[in-house]
Length: 169
Image 1: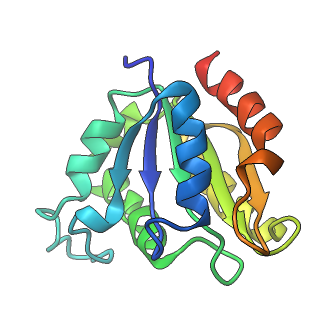
Image 2 (image 1 turned 180 degrees about the horizontal axis):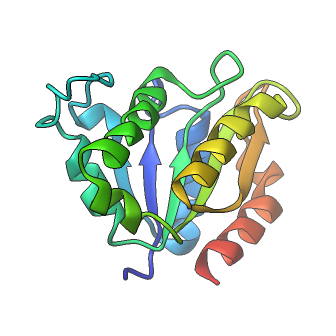
């Protein structure tokens, strides 16, 4: 397995607050990145007509890492659409690529996020937690930064350092 963590990033603002928080973390520990905007991932299809899009490319990359960070801002109390489509597609690893799905068990997932509220609504984290639990993925924790006036690295350094220590442990 790869010692570095893999980041799966989704945002409509590729240089926004979440990207800046991720950059601060990346500067400390160096991470591998997947930007969902760079891949063609279509919505879940019960007939699996989309099985040849880029979803399984990402899943296979995920399998090379023990730790996966899902990075996205909070949009309307939940994950952005790109991340939601990606999570919906986990149904495919349970239906048509079960052996890939089984290989996700035991990995550890983290959430990295920003938003305008002091803390995210509980529902934001619960979507991730329930998905991880269902897939057999361990949950590390979330690094969240409130950014009502934009991301300020100096205000987040201690949290970023603590989070990086967990990722590299």
